[in-house]
Image 1 (cartoon, each protein chain N blue to C red):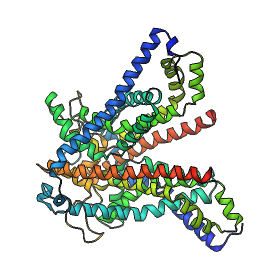
Image 2: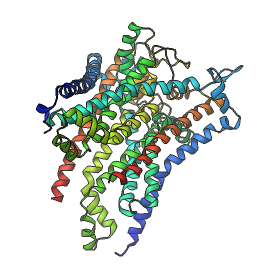
Image 3: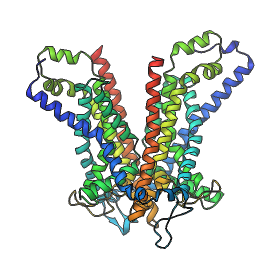
Image 4: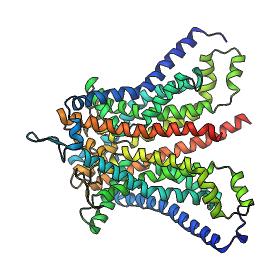
Length: 291
Length: 289
């Protein structure tokens, strides 16, 4: 495309080659370092990975045994988080997209608040969760406190991504539904939400990925217990916290920390691949309906 | 369009959810302020900047010097951006102007996956692989250098992806016109594409700065956690976020209030960055459109 190079003076050609080499090296080394990290995690983690590791009890503070209860606690924290964040986030996005005019003061205040929330560092969510959920609401160090704290944290992703999905819907759906005499509620339930569903699923998947990879917000909210959780009011240790604790506080915890890190990495990659796949299908699906 | 009763009910309940979502950040700031209030009230605030060391738990002579931690946060952030920005931007230029389109999609996908790698995984890798390597070079290994390197890896995908988006947003007509005028590819990059994408690339770098300031896990595992001014790259440091993560579990009274104050400082710093970015963005949009 850009090829007047044949006529370019020699200096320009040399500069062009220098940029190509520097840029290529930067690109390649970025990917190579990440390849190195993944390889290290596989090398260190895979020998300790087994079915027994995934389902077994945590023994001797994590040095031996498995991560069964930790996985269950992680799942429960995630479910609590989604149970609160999904209705809140989708409700907020629907209101912003369907019930207020874009650029109006109400819409600007709410989106501004949500964007500010997105900028809050995760350790501060941890501080807030510990004060508000654990102490003020009296939930203590529990799976519920951890889930609620994470819900605050992933709320902005849910709102923003769902909003994108709703705003990306074909513009003629709304007047079309109104012309058929449908009420706004029916339009929403029967037309808009089903059409935007793939986009909303992307939002939820991204939120799950973010929640699963979070550690700092859970340090002082969900607790450190490694027993099988009996209820949501009990303390339970998330997988990411388990990795941190094994690596930092438990002598000789490193082998099992590697295996846990590998499990977390694989889970996150799978979730993010799902999100990418869903997004690509969603864009194709949309371009199909509009053309 | 007539409004049924259900419509009004739905509108009000969704509005309630929206107000809750938008107001949550206020609730967080209020709780931080309440927690930090004892510091402000008892005049400890000045100690944060004047005390020389950090010994908040000591009964006889507690010292509340926050400066070494603020300096550590600043240094770690600046160094990691200094490493990540050239790599990210150079990679993005390569992606836009040299990489065949077929590879571009894969590059993009890979970077997106990398952006999602959990910070605790970076921290763990840093602790088990990078820190021993630095230790062989110059003990103790857990250091300003280790923290900056791990953090730069963490923010690199963000810088690369935002720079790519900014370069892709430069209209093809402009780069083609440059070619038509006989400018070489190198000249097109430096005189047309990079100046046009400057604002977008800068915005991406600022976002990465915000992320770096607030990052906890990747840093706390490799920085050494000693609250003193570092005198070299190989000295251990302790940024603000690590201090909160390490001490919140047992802090009480004044000490605890100080940690809330530290949290408040973090929130204000990041919010100021992001707010400025949004303001800049809203000013730029009408000018370019």
